[in-house]
Every structure is written in C-alpha cells, then in structure tokens.
Length: 286
Length: 313
Image (cartoon, rainbow over all chains, first blue to last red; front, side, top):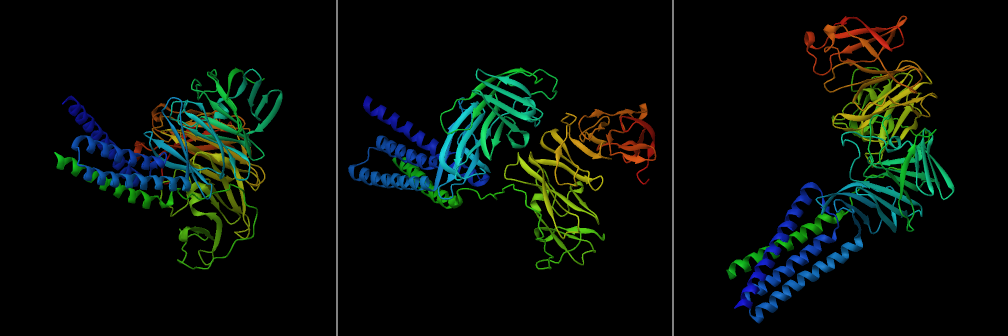
C-alpha cells in the first residue's frame, strides 16, 4: 500500500515536471518567434524535448501501470521521439557551434554561435539566462581555437584565432561603473600610472604603454578599441595584444579632478593559459 | 483520471512534435546575415557614374539649383535643378547611422555640405553600434571625383553630427553619441588639410546633450549644450582650436533669466561677435520665438545683452 502511494506521488511529481518544462519550451518558442530570439545554446531545445518525454513516459508508467502491450507501444513511441531529437541535435552541432560561458556570479551568460561552414560567428546578448538575441557579428571568422576568461563579474574576454591566423579579442560587457546613464571612455577614466608586481601601465595623452616582465610596448589611441563602457582592447599589427578592463570596485567620475578609486585588470591576448593581472593606481603621470 | 493523463500526454507529445517542426523550419538561417564592413577607407576614385534614370525618375528634394535626392535607395546630387545627376559613392543607410528616427527622405540638416565648390557628407559604418567608424565622403569638382576619409575609427551610436568648412583648409566635425537618457559624449574633430586627416580635440568635459557647435575661424570654436529643459545658456568657447575650453558667461538681464536659455552659434559682426540665444523647447515668452541677441567684444568669453530679436528679423 505504502509502496503504491509513493509510486503515485512520484508519478505526479514527474507529471508536474513534465508540464513545467513543456510550458517553458512552448513559451520560449513563442518568445523566440515573436522577438527573433533563440536559446543561448541551440542544443537546449532538443535536450529539453528529451527530458520532457522521458519524464512523461515515467509518470505514465508510475501513475497508470499500463499493460505490457501498451507499455511496449508507449516505449517505442517515446524512444523514437528521443532518437529523432538526438539525431537533430547532432545535426545542429555540425551546423552551428555554440560557445557558452557563465559569469562567476551566475548572472550573465556569454553566448557566441559560429556557423560550422563559413566559420563566421555572432555574439548573442543573453536574456533571463536561457534566451538570447543576436547583437553583433565578430569582425573575424574563428579558426576553432578560442579562450574565454571573465575579467570581472560583468566582463568576459573572448580571445580567438581568426581564419587569417591572427589573434583577436572580443569583449562582452554586461554592466557599467558609472551612474548607468552616460557613456564614458575607459581610456580617459584610467589616465595615470598603474602597477602590479612585474607590470606597469602608463596611460597618458599619447596612448597607453605597458611594461611587462621588462618589455615595454606602446599603443597609440588610434589602435585602442573600446567595448561597452568597461574594457578596451589594445592592438598591434591588426592583432589584439592586451585588454584593460575596469574591476567591480572602479569608480567612474565625470569630473576628472576627482581621485581615482578602484582597480583595473590587464589581460594578455593569448590562447595559452594567461592570468589577468590586477593593477593598483599609483598616481598621475608626471 | 486515466483518460486525463493519456489526453495530457498526447497533447504534450503533439505539441512537442509541432514545436520541432517550427523550430527546424524557423532556424534555416541560424546566424543572422550581417553586412560585413571592413572599415577600410576607400582610395580616391574616379568611379563615379552619371546615372541614368533607370528605376524612378529623380527629383530634387527642393527647388534649388544645387540639390540632392535620396530616391532609389541612393544619394544623388545635382547642380542643375535635376537635369543631370551624380551618384555619391556611399550607401544611403550609412548617412543615417546611429540615433535617427526620421523617414530618410531628406539628409540630416548639419550632416552635409552641398555648395558649388564642395559636396561633403558625413557617414558612419560598422556592425558594432557602440564603435562605428565615422567618415566623410567629399568632392571638390562637383562629383567627378570623390574621396573618402576617416574622421574617427570608433564612435558610439551617433546622435548629433555636424560638418563644416571654415575655409579651404580648415574644417571641423562635431559628433555626439552613446546617449543614455539625457547624457552623452560630445567630440569635436578638426582638419587643417581640407578634410584629408582629422584630429580629435579636447572637450569641455560635460555630458549634457549638445544643441549646436561651430568654429568661426581656425582657433575659435563654440559648443552649446542643453536641449532638454535648459535653464540658462551653457556655452563653451575655445581660442586654441579645441586644446582648452572655457565656459562663456552671459550678462543676462534679470527679466530674461529663465527666458533665453539655449545659445545658438555666434557670428562675426564688424569688430565683435554676436549670438542669438533662443528660448529652448519650452519657451513661451512672447510666443516662444523671440530670441535674445548678445554681443561679445572678447572673442566669445563674455556676452552682454543687446536686444530682443523678433523671429522675422
């Protein structure tokens, strides 16, 4: 009797899960069609389909205790459905490569989708964690190798090798260090001298110079590209060299005479393992 | 109960299968097709073509001798009231890039110059709205040859844009963009070689919305801010081609204090500068169209009230 009861409870719970996921799937489909959105990862659609059908099958099993004949036919129908979704999923993975990365605080999702044939990639802005809309095409097609690093809770650096073998960087930003109401220049906000153990960054009128392990590189302002209001990429010979991003504690002031507060982070554009370097403000450049 | 569960199960299964068909068919173009812009400036070219009216006969936007048309999704200019046309080598959409909500039937007022001597049009291109390349396409021989030059490689979504030539060599471009609510960035650029190369100047550092800006000679320039509920003129002046900016002060008679609030651009009059200050978008003094005229004898740093100016003067 007791066994029978828990079987029923289990069955109902599974049916509720089925209904929940089904509503989510249908709602997402509607939103996707209406707002030209998609899942952050295209594979989610098929995985959800499979989860829904497996839960449904189990709940019917537990609640109705079907005869062997009916059970077999149900199993065949559901199995066919799961297999079909599996095949479509594999097909989709060949057509589109999904690059996903979740921020350290689980608030943002970096989503980049790459066309399997042309290798061109599009950056998607995520909404509610699972949906995304195309924001912009990456300027260079990706040659398979890439690296994602979160430089702050709301700054993701996507370093990739382009099809022309150059190293490029795209920075996805999801926040702001000012009041959120105005645009500002990261280069202008980080004027002055910044230092870490073996690294020194000097930002002045001419550009930004970076001294790392005894080697100095100078980047003029014309070769510095800003992403959002949180990061800049320093370029050399049409390749990304370094990224500078504002840490969460950085305070943006409209008034340049105010004291600089907070840290910036320096990150080398490289596909090899490289750690972001946290820099402290030392003062104005004399 | 059994029927309910079976019914529900069937609906879910049918829904999922239908969803799969919709998803598969909808997703044929998985990646949206963006137009790739290389951002490379094009070299001077003689590739301009005299267009023949193929699709729709071209009509000038106004009755002037020198005019333009944006028909057939292209920009054409004419120097003879529409008898003959020259196509400008720039895509129509790039002329309206950024924050623009109009119908694209006429060019943005200050974004171009079209005179007998010179045709110049500001454009912006690039897939990333937050960092578009702003350039200028211009011709000094009535459209026979065109040159395209980059003003800035990276600028956020344009709102205000203005280009003008003070003389043959000295030109300026004033851009504003990246607007969020009532704040934005404003940036002037100057060229001292007739528009070939452009240099960014310093800025006054305010993030209010710009209402207008201009250089009156190679050194002296003005930027006027405040388009939403301004309460006094907010005018900055430079006397060293944008190296440094200082706020101009207005000797405003008390009765006009909340009335004349938005400075227009100064003009040279005899031995002094004159400026009109209008009532902004919400002015209602004598119908809201009357402006205050101010005079400056120190090159725009301080302004004394001169008189009221009627709209028809």
